[in-house]
Image 1 (cartoon, rainbow, N blue to C red):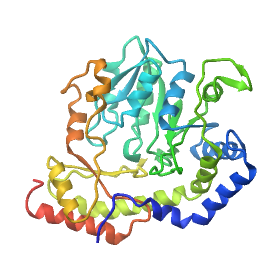
Image 2: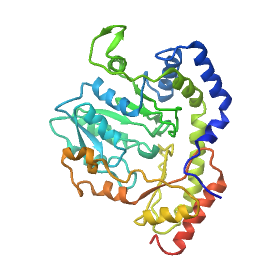
Image 3: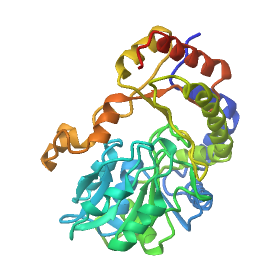
Image 4: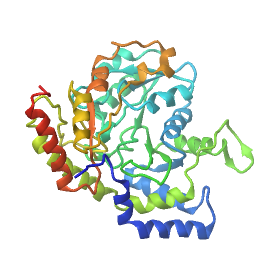
Amino acid sequence: MNVPFFDLRATHDEIHDEIMAAVAGTLQRSNFILGPELEKFEAEFAEYCGARHCIGVGNGLDALRLILLAYGIGPGDEVIVPAHTFVATWLAVTEAGARPVGVDIDPATYNLDPSLISAAVTPKTRAIMPVHLYGRPADMAAINEVAAKHSLVVIEDAAQAHGATAFGKRAGGLGGAAAFSFYPTKNLGALGDGGAIVTSDDEVARRAQTIRNYGSAKKYHHTSLGTNSRLDEMQAAVLRVKLRSLDGKNEARQRLVQRYLERLKRIQGLGAPEIDPQMKSVWHLLVVQTPGRDALAEHLASHGISTLVHYPIPPHLQEALAHLGYKRGDFPVAEQAAEEVLSLPLWPEMSDSHVDRVLDALEAWNGFGRLS
């Protein structure tokens, strides 16, 4: 039995009729930009996250960038970011004209290490941008404490954390503002690109709404230098359908991960994630770590099991960001993670037999002593 990394069709097959009805309704109304479906989705997703406002935008990168612009962060400013994340976290800062300042990660969680933040703060620092990587919330209590000490804004990169909670509060309500991506494979995914800004700050919401629409709150009246980044009606309609089942899908992921972890923890030499009862991960990705990552991936592929690496080159070593002046060795924990992490197959409709197939192959590899 082959095991794909992700089966998006399974999710859509379950709600095919509802999606088609939502698409048909949008076609019937023929209002495709800034219409009623977007307004309803924004209200529903804001309520889901426990925030006052949601602003639908074109993608997750735009959501991060527009938050920075809404806070007035730009040239001459610095934003603290984790050294292990998708490059979009850093790109959003550079696109706003500010400088991303890397901070290493906690090896136990892969998230921003709060104990290292203060040392990176300078008079130019305006914000901290933690990432809820792989669907696990960052240590927001500690991060918010550091932010308050230095009078900094906290912006959540929640692109992988739809529905994740920390101490009972959902991602999107753990900082000043949050950015979500609705890329199709996200826990809440559209049928194309999409994103959203979530905040309870009325002024940030007003500015973001204006910036996303050419800097205009009233047609042909442009009060600021804006852009065109609007979540379209079709995607909003589909997201409204999928939002209704998000909690159930996240619970399915959590059950599958529990099944994985029962055996993963017994495999010598393979680092597996720990479950923190106060931090409810939604397991966008299930990541293990081993120095033999590439060989392990080849072994699993030979057994028909697909894996991916998130992310093989950390942002500070990307050619596009070489002008920032970082070098290999600046963030050793993040660099080791980039060389050793491997994402295992996981999707909500995955069967127990699929999970067991992956685990059998992992244990067979371990049986040759190649993970130790």
